[in-house]
Amino acid sequence: ELKNLNQFPMNFNGVDYQVKIGDQALLKGATVHSMSIGPTGNTRVNLDTKVSLASLGGMVKTLRKGGSLPMKFTGNLGMQGHGKQKPVAIDWQGDVPVQQ
Picture 1 (cartoon, rainbow, N blue to C red):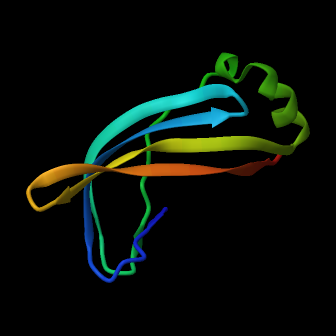
Picture 2 (picture 1 turned 180 degrees about the horizontal axis):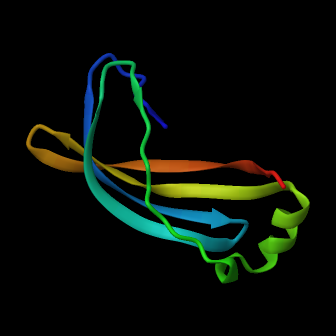
């Protein structure tokens, strides 16, 4: 979910992203979907991805027993403004709980 803390609307044209669990790259991709977020509003962004069991490697044990995994989500939103496209960095990290 993206939140706009500004008093003005924000328009984006796509997002590129990478997801890591621990030090291991899990997902990488891009989308060109346009989106708008109203003043002080929010919107959900769905990213179509596929993960194979083989790509999880040593994380399978943690997934089976529950607990949490350290995750990092980075990328850029393509912000539209004044006729130009400017990248807006995304950088989130935290522990994601895993349920059995």
